[in-house]
Image (cartoon, rainbow, N blue to C red; front, side, top):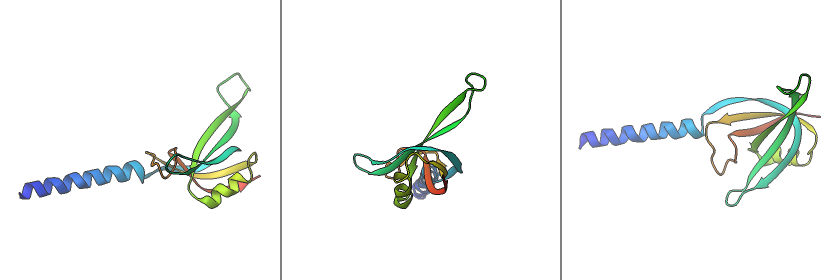
Length: 120
């Protein structure tokens, strides 16, 4: 009976560690800059805030060619969402956190924007 309890506790600790690592451990964080394409509130059951930045830069295309990259993200705070929603088309510097997994009530992406650094 003692071994069953020890095994059960070990399995629960491993499962808890896995869930924490997958969904709550911040894998990376940084700042992305670009023109805000959209900011929307959507979802069937969990309404989440989502957005997309268009980043411009020199890419692997033709020499000297301008390439655009899309950065899709979820938005953590309604105040940040309102600021983005009211200023679509402007250039933003957004601070984000990256997670390994997606939780349905947190958003549709592994990138979670938590604040606006700069707006032009």
